[in-house]
Image 1 (cartoon, rainbow, N blue to C red):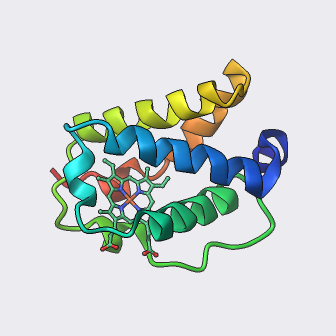
Image 2 (tube, protein in one colour; image 1 turned 90 degrees about the horizontal axis):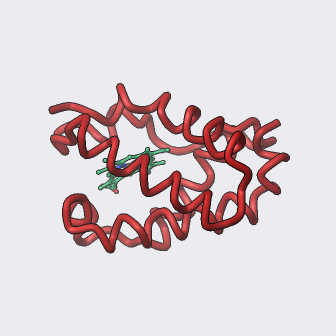
Length: 116
Ligand code: HEM
């Protein structure tokens, strides 16, 4: 699975931590996370990604369409955030083809997150 190829839960969590660091350093998308506990956010998103990448534990959290409703995320903002995931994967040394396959999995939630 992609989960195994990336190096399992520890590797996915490390990439997710860098993903949110990149987001928080980008004023075009950081405001969405004002007041959010980023340690919890990192753990939840890492759990979601582990499941989506073929890991052994099912996602036990909330429905992503309900979670992101009313945030007003645009397609352009979503694309920016996907870019932050791509850089986090690349800076972790993940091979380019695996980066793109992982990004493709994250892209599957675009329709649940984008509402504007
Ligand atoms: C939760 C914003 C993209 C997965 C949240 C929350 C915010 C947020 C503010 C916290 C909601 C709350 O606790 O009240 C955004 C923005 C995105 C984006 C602005 C893109 C522009 C994504 C993507 C994924 C994702 C690409 C998955 C790959 C999650 C998960 C939660 C969450 C798993 C927690 C759900 C739960 O509480 O059970 N998001 N998100 N989000 N987001 Fe996103």
